Image (cartoon, rainbow, N blue to C red; front, side):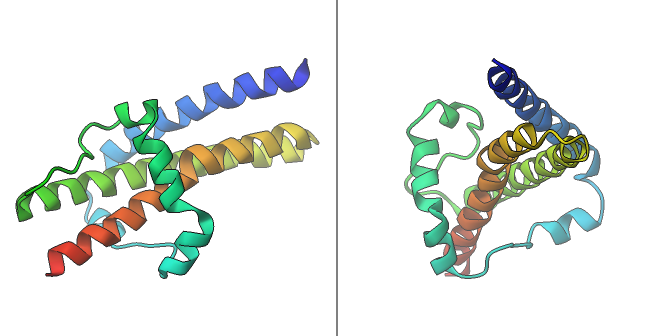
Length: 152
């Protein structure tokens, strides 16, 4: 029964982290350092992305209800350079929002570990990886692909 409560709390906390990510992201997007964040990438090579299963994760996002969350991240045939740059900007926004959400939940994970609630901390970590870290990495992966198109 307690695992179910942890699970439900993890779902709620994930949605809260997305909201916190949006709010903080909106507050910082006009700052000068924000542009530097747009070129940040945790993973530099495609082999690591493949091992992490980012293409599979992307497929899951595109073919599930999660595709409804950010309608601005849709590619269409024959997109102009301006359209691609706009999508790239939305990718950066989504990436940073999820990264903020990831860091927000990390605080709770450390608190739970400090309180000896290791099962809860592990469950939160799993949710945080799936619903914040992987979306961040996916945005970085897709951003790199858009950059390659824009270089041509």
